[in-house]
Image (cartoon, rainbow, N blue to C red):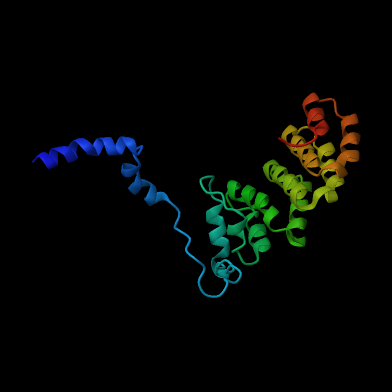
Length: 207
């Protein structure tokens, strides 16, 4: 009985002295990364390529990814999609939900290709395309192709005096194009009276 009482009295003191290490040990072990043992066998080769999505499921899979904002697919996800340019182009077509179309345009930064480049330019320059898609296209062109299409973006900026948000998106895209777009931005700035748009065109980078 005395031994049991001594143990009961000593155990809290041991835990205090150890800083709770004994009590915390099982919890830490559960979340600790697995121990790295010594290397065994031959050196490992390169990592396996990601498993590709079946071609017949590609469009439906990407459409499901793009339906809402709860899930944001990354480059690693898109790398699993066969013929990604064609899939994204199909999802920008009329008949798809607006959010799917817009996110498909934005996702074209993961599929630089003559086909997606042509689709982005067609959307940007089409007066019939929804303004949201045109805004997304302007940024995707800037991210994917730098200042290659600076004059096309500038032309849309100048041709849309009534669509302030589209003009802002074009101005921001020009800034994202970097130093090569400076001559174009300076030319536009001389023609713009709106102080907010002038501020965007004068920015060094997009925040």
